[in-house]
Length: 212
Image (cartoon, rainbow, N blue to C red; front, side, top):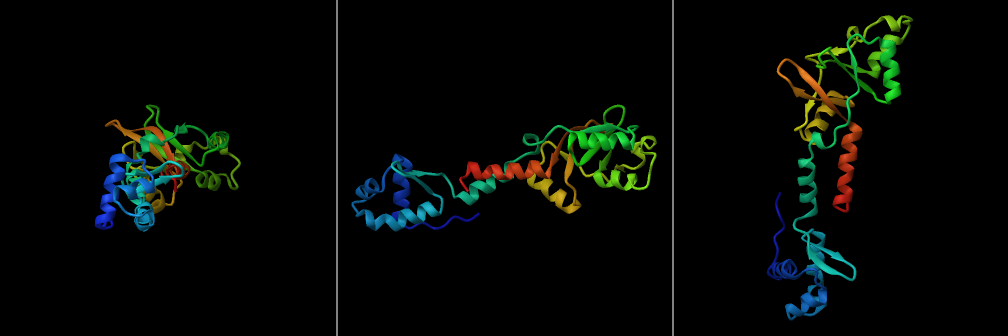
């Protein structure tokens, strides 16, 4: 990302604040042997650009980098491992009826189906369960492995993936959550889940960190 070009006086102001901030506008002007009114436009530009920050009754201090750049850096650095939640899993032989009950008791939109060795074998969405339950009175006799989405049609992510990468996967596939997996060689172990809610909350947290 390109940075704005600073003129000579703005560069001098930045150096003063870096060295001695927090410092008032009057003190900066005195260092430059200029009137406060003369440097007011420069201070405004540096503050709006994000090079400086200002606090009432405190003065100006160096903020390090432009806010847009700072937010972008923070967003790119957000990893799944820091925001994932506990996965909600059921076994392959769980009945559709029990899966429906489990989904509503846990208040989730997706269940992950695992084998006897706790490896990911399928995914169940609300749509899958609703489609099966319509006109069917034997839900307690139908195991979920009959109706679940199976590999290789399961979209998943790893703990090291960035939230931006996962968000793009969700949008591309039009799904609300992904299982977080750990490759065990013989299969994928479900170690977490990441949802649109997790990602939204993570990105909203940037507004607190960067005073947006």
